[in-house]
Image 1 (spheres, rainbow, N blue to C red):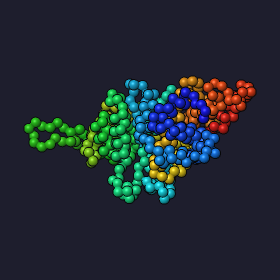
Image 2 (image 1 turned 90 degrees about the vertical axis):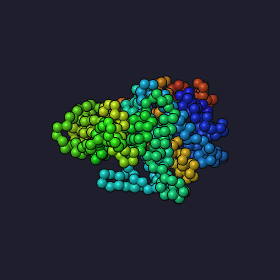
Image 3 (image 1 turned 45 degrees about the vertical axis):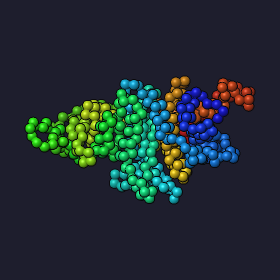
Image 4 (image 1 turned 120 degrees about the horizontal axis):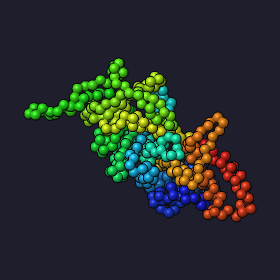
Length: 453
């Protein structure tokens, strides 16, 4: 592209420090091409979208992924600070973490393994698929022009399979170890006065992660099992009595047993669900010690949530911050669904699982870039929104009143194409004789061509 608007450049320029000048030009070309193209997100597709089909030195663009040394961690740090600038100083930073499976096969892909496919599996049948497992950490953020909180990825880590590590002679690192390492890195980045909240699904309800969160002053919100071991707080040690003080008190009822008790003090609460839909729920909450074998009992605030209509199963939640309000715990866990939407939309609109790199370094680079593009599009749309409203694309069969990611992506694509048609406020020499009505007609055509696919 010959020219880019400040709304686009202000989001992309901070990443230029990761590359040399020649590499940055190639990186910018690939980023813009990936945003503009549809279908498979290969290097060749990005070059075609940028009008470089006849580029003879196309291999240099491949080398940006499989040879050039640049740090994904530094890129994640830059993106993280760009995202949290949108969060007011007094509010906590809500991180979400989850795994996603990228279905890939091929002899050259070393880190692949067989994992549970959450999309294809059901309660009665588990489906496993061959592919790469990625651990993604996001920032949950909600701006006035969006209906729901968006989960913006900034760190994406490849988790090699156990067999891959055994072949390489490396110690296998579990998901909880990776999560703790990522959380420690974020904790080092931020000002210690900012409060961090980590939200994960039931797979992240482990003693190791909870203990690490307590040591760093991070609040972990996750889902517990119905038969989780709960204990009363330990009694005070009697003066003069020999021996170690007790680490826990008497065993308490688990959540299954609580549901059988008739006179529990249930409370009703109206919570804001996904997409801003309000619904009434019933809950009970208390503080206790959570019994885990790895690190010993830990103090938690638990919330047992039930649906008065009976459509949803009872859900036990917990926070390692005993002072956290039960309503906040419930709404934080509901917002966690945003990361699942992010995974779906990166596949639908940004081509995750369509890239075809085979070398280890290119594989480690390509998927984190596509995940980060989701956040970059959101930041660009936020800048464009300051200049003029973003058009909401609705239809007779899909009425919507609020912006979605497809609207943001379409607006960003339109801005990039307009920058190519108009340079510094002057029309190209080939377009000098076109009337303003003609320019509007061309913009309408581009709008239809750039429908997010």
